[in-house]
Image (cartoon, rainbow, N blue to C red; front, side, top):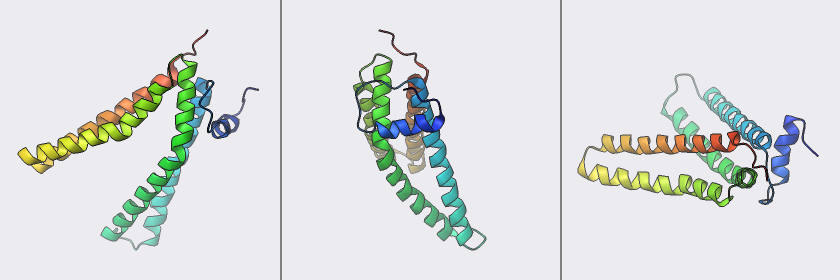
Length: 165
C-alpha cells in the first residue's frame, strides 16, 4: 500500500525503524527528511525563544551560556533519537538506487567521526606552529566542507532515480 499523505510517509520511516532490507523511494526519503528537519529547527527556535523570555532583557552572558548548554544537550538527544531511523531509511534508499547500503553507513560514520577527528588534529598541529586564530579558521573550513559533503550526499540520495531491475 502506497502512502498518499505526508504524515503517512513520515510515520512509515518510524515504523520501519529496524528494517534495513528493502527499498525506500525518493518521496519517502525526502518526506521524512523534510519533516524531521523542519521539526528540529522549529524546536530549536522555540527553545531559544523560551530561554530569552525567562531571562531579563539585555541578554547578559548567562542567557547565552544557558541557551548554548540547553541546545547542545538537546542536540545530543536528537542525534541519538534520529540516528537509527535516518540510517535505516538511508540504507533502504541506497538499495532503491542499486547501491550497497554500506556506502551510506560508512559515509555517515566518516562524517561524524573521521572528519571531526581530522579537523581537531589539524587544529592542534596548526596551533603549535602558528597563530591560534588561524587554526580555528582551518577547523571551521573543514567543518563547512564536511557539511557541504553531507548535503551533496543527501541531494544524491533524493535525486537519483530508482534502479529498474
